[in-house]
Image: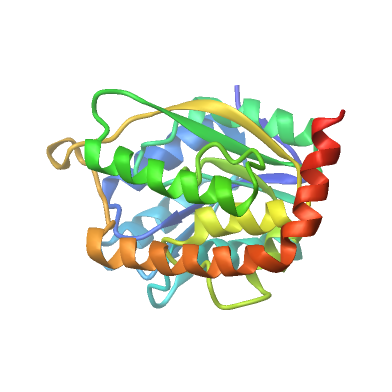
Length: 255
């Protein structure tokens, strides 16, 4: 049964994901109303296909960006439009089918019970996960643990999350970063620095091979360089925050 709320929406950024985004949207719509898709300068015809789908579905909205700006840029455009219509929380999920729409309602329920928190998915990988990608996550996760003084971000890169829109917009609009592949880890770290509580829940994830319709725009050199620069920024930003974060962790451990 499709569930809905006047405050919470599903937000799906998409770039050249072809037929995969149509299947993802169909599954998301069976689970939740409304679902918004931000087409980030796609050139594969998926934007037009989504618009045709939305023409017959009032629970689906499609935003079209003329140029590709990256995942974070697409999410930010969606957040601004959602806030203008009174939404307070957004569940982000990937367009390529890796994230299970069956978990949407449970994450939304947690968010509605704890509206001050961000609800972070923790991936449970199966044998389809590329070993190199999984190993790389461990490095990023270790750095994020350090940057937040082990603040509860169990996985820094997993994009199945519910964010408070106002808090996320504030951290994104305070600078020019978090626009591309650096969005997920940096957003979580900076929200943690601001004291946004974290609730983490396991989520099964599947990687699809290309012959199965899998789509990936991750580029090992380009995106790992972007992540390395992001972590350097965050580690330098940690230094002036150390006393406050250490005090917060001390108080939390005494509860």
